Amino acid sequence: MRAQISSIDLVLALIVFSLLFVFFVGSWSSTVSSAKNAMKKNRMEYAALSATDLLLKSPGSGSAGSAGGFAADFYDPFDSLGSWSAGGGGNWVANGVAYSSDTWESNLYRSGAYSNDYQVLAKVQFNSGLGGGPVIQGGSAGLNGYACRLVGTGLQLTQLSGGAAWAIPGASYLGTVTPGSWYYVKANASGSTKQCKYWAVGSSEPSGWQVTGSDSLFTSGAYYGVYGKAGVQFDDFQQGRTTASSGNSTLSSAGFASSPYELSAAKIAQFTALNYSVQKSLLGMQEEFYFYVDTAGGTRLYEGGNLTVKSRGIVSITRYGMLNGNKVKIGMMVYG
Image (cartoon, rainbow, N blue to C red; front, side):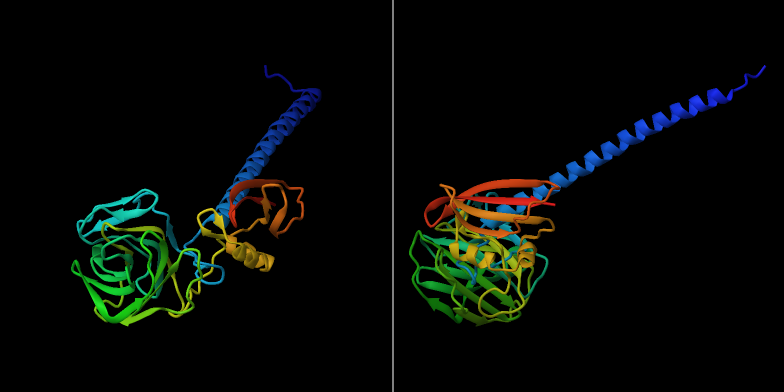
C-alpha cells in the first residue's frame, strides 16, 4: 500500500529544501565572491609591482626628453644569455653584462618582429681592441648586417658580411671615448640608410645622428644584437619600432632611471607634469593609482596619480633607489 504524503509533510519538506537552497547557494555565492576578490587583489598587486619596477627600470636612457624615452619592444639587462645566440663561433657570457672571451670578433644575436624602421640601443664599455656595438638589419644567424661600433676614437658604421667587417667610407664620427667608461650607442635602420650616435651614460643624448651612412647590400633584416670581441662589454640592450629616422627616438617611456635604480629628477618631474590619463597609459594601468618619492626621512619629493581613497581596497608596493646620490623610497598604490 502506497504511503500518503500529508500536507504537513509536504510543507516541512519544502521548508527543509528552502533552507538547504539558501545555505548552499549562499555558500556558493560567498565562495565565488571571495574568489573574485582574490583574483582582483592579485591583479592589483601585479599592476603595482609592474608599475613600480617600470618606474625604477632604466630602459637605456640618457636624460629626460631625449633617449630618456625609449619604450623598447624588447629589453634585456643581460643577466643571462636567455634568448640570445652566439654567431661566428663566438663564446659569449652574460652575467649582468654581456661580453665575448674570444680574440676574434663575433656577434650575439636574436630575431625581432620586423626587419626595417627600427632602432636598437645598448650600453657599451670600450676597454681595448677594435671596440664593438649594437647590430641592425642582421641576416640569418646574425652573420650579416651593420654595427654602430664604438672605437677608441669615436663611432664607426661597419658592414658585417659573411663573417667579415668592413668600415663604411665616410660613415664615422671622431669623439672622446674613455676606456672603462660606459656609453649609450643607438643605431637606426631605415632601408639603405643607417644611422648611429653615442653619448656618455649620465649625459644628454645628442639631438641628431652623428653618423649617417648609405649602403644597399642589406636593406632589411629582422636579426639584431651586439658585435665585438674581448675588450668590450654590453648592458641594457633594447630594440623598438620607430616612425622617423632622425634625431631622438619618437618612442617614450615611463622609466625614471638614468641607470638601474639611479633615478633621474628631470624624468620624474617630466612624468608628474603629464595628464593623469597619459600617466596611466604610459604605465599600462587600468586601475587607479598613486605614487610618491620620499627622502629617507619621510619628506615627500614627488608625487603623481590620484590620491583619492577608494573603499574597494588598496594594494601598496614599496621600493628603494638612489636620487642625486641619496637613498629614497618609491611607493606605488593601486586601488579599484
